[in-house]
Amino acid sequence: GVLIGFSVTTETAFPVVTALMFILGYFGGLFNPVPSLPHAMQTAARVLPSYHHASLGLDLVAGRPFGIANWLVLAAWTAGLSALVIARHHAEEVRGVA
Image 1 (cartoon, one colour):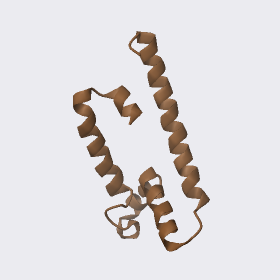
Image 2 (image 1 turned 45 degrees about the horizontal axis):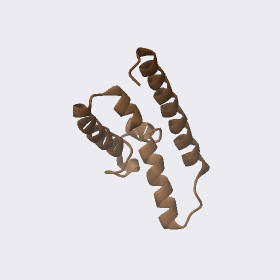
Image 3 (image 1 turned 90 degrees about the vertical axis):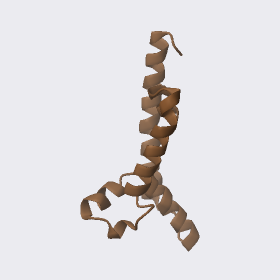
């Protein structure tokens, strides 16, 4: 959300967030079971954070222990997006906007 706030105008933030929500939801397997997707989409789903959020929720509901791979992928996404936010904020500071 912060990265989107740094990247787009206030008028376009809501449509961008909505589009990303649907894209991550669809390709992350939230609307369709991942095994029913084509092979390439299954591979893409396993990279997205939405897939790993859903996997953690399904593990919780099923009473299974949480998978460490889910946490690692989510940590990687958090680190990557945090680095982009920091870089974007630094660019804004250099311009004198932030």
